[in-house]
Length: 263
Image 1: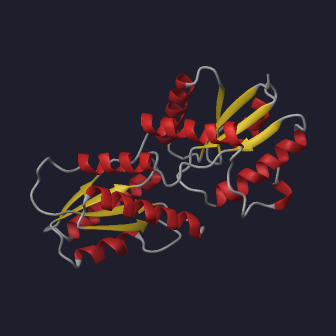
Image 2 (image 1 turned 45 degrees about the vertical axis):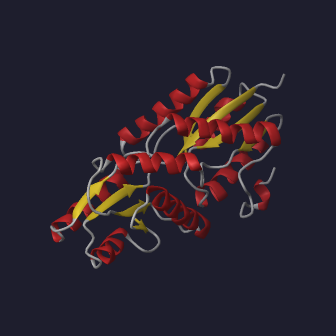
Image 3 (image 1 turned 60 degrees about the vertical axis):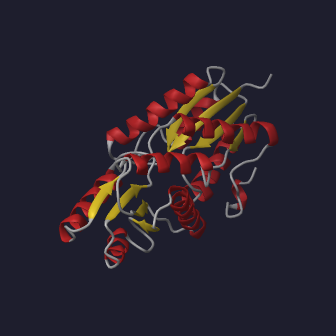
């Protein structure tokens, strides 16, 4: 039987608590699947890095499957991961390397986000609320588009008067501009959803910007929901992404992958 190892891949953070959150989730996945050899690695900012994680598992497996714990497929998954897999295939020609899809647009993430938003509100609270979701922002139009789709799905599922996307960096609308545009409509209540998997620098920056917005608009009740974080439903979704590779060979889309890195 082919020996298979799983490498759960995170982005990596300068904040130790963010990396600790990620590694706790990897531990949860390992407990769910004691039949699998599960390791972890990071794209940047923390260790072990992706190349080291691949080499470590390749030394004891004949098949290595990368499970990206990423919300969407942007440049890291479309460029960095294929390059790393290409290098690993050259270094370990007898090992089969594959990468699963990211979490993506999925009902489980909608449900988690909606639960966090509702937790920021009190039951039977009078008055309408608008939702302001905040993503990191990417140079990849597909990733930004998927985020906007998720905001629409969460907004409709939650019955919000309005649901607006915004970004912390790279693309528009930025959080401050989107919040000020919402303020023009004089909403009674704004719920801010940090659309990030883990705590860290971006969550800190978001909190500071939201605090300044609330100070400028004391007549608006501003609430901040919790970031997405680890959840059993996320672990189940990781298993779903793994099963896609194992059962049908479905993998990370490589429409934009370098040709030299193709399997």
